[in-house]
Length: 398
Image (cartoon, rainbow, N blue to C red; front, top):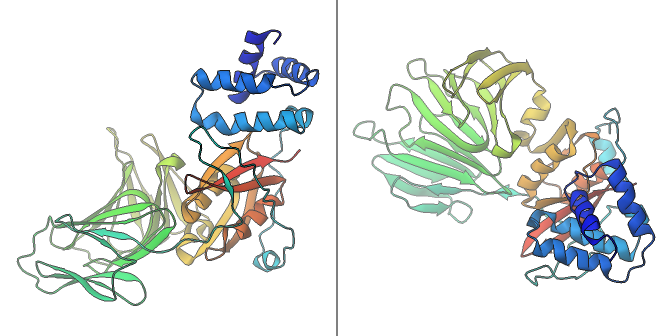
């Protein structure tokens, strides 16, 4: 292979999206004058043996496929799409969209661990489920638990209602320790509701962990921890016992109000949205900063900095109302939400589209209903099953 080292270097830059325009031209010219005689595949093997990160495996497979099919088309420099193009949101329109979803049958080439990739037609939405961990370490899978009392501990009854809520009830006001900590967690594709012992109601989104005292009103304040994920709180009013929610990045203090906290690690920020009442939001760093939110506002906490902006309540609270809704959102943000609710992994082929998206749909719809919205902006999808995990491969059309 001529200029072997140079081509390997250019190809590695292409995989990492660090290649310059001139280098891209050189790589394109090289591929354009070669037939598929196995040289590119040899190059792929050399890149793998050289310690290429696993996350780039999809790009390697794409390059091999491109040699066999449409090399010139697949390796053209990527177009930049402006942010001004929007998809209007109208629920009635979505019901009548007739464009078929672009699922293509993926080849049965085995991966490095010889696990076949199986084409999948669709994925069902998430459901109501969660895991309760009691103070003694006992774990209860609430989806399997029967309706009625599921635990009794030191004067506190924990029960599951027919509506799928977890309810804490104090039977004996005296003698209940303050440090009886329980944990309620949802996995990807799960959501749940809980009524704490003080009467506060909490909705947990997918991939969320909430930690709280079984006897929440026993101390001077009612402290809970949102370790990760997203939760909506309807706090029972109690002027003598402030309600405090701690996350890794901030602390929210209220007396009685309705608010939402989004604290997923992969979002890179903690967003607190106030629907009713008033809350004090403080950062958790060495130099504490705090602000007071008014209804219809939201705070963004990033790296010990905090700022306030007007909230889009429809977008921020859609999940709690059983909807998936996004407004002027980049595709990465949309698909992070989709990934958590449908319990799938996302892989990008090439550079993701720079368009923003607007749309909404009920969360009880299958994955294909959401993808139809994105598909209207020249985004293609392949849905496969690898190692028993659903993977959505995303690429742009050109």
